Length: 113
Image (cartoon, rainbow, N blue to C red; front, side, top):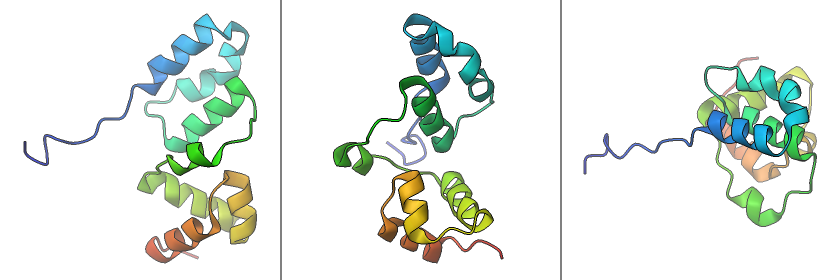
């Protein structure tokens, strides 16, 4: 197959989370509607939906290792760091990331001052 045809498709998160909300958590539909009404969900939106629906649980190291971030989400995370004047350690705790990952992102993606 051609590389263009092999593009990875993202799961249809809107449908998945809508089904979870209607079947298991009908009381939280209004709370999550603002995120689900977006045209396209980013990685950060999905993380926020998880926290709103299931609460803040400790994320295991195995689960954290399997996360992947697109360029748009990485730039939003780095802009968040600049906006709130956080160092790499504070940002890593907030988003549950490795400090080394953040340092690597900062060298790869230059955010304007």
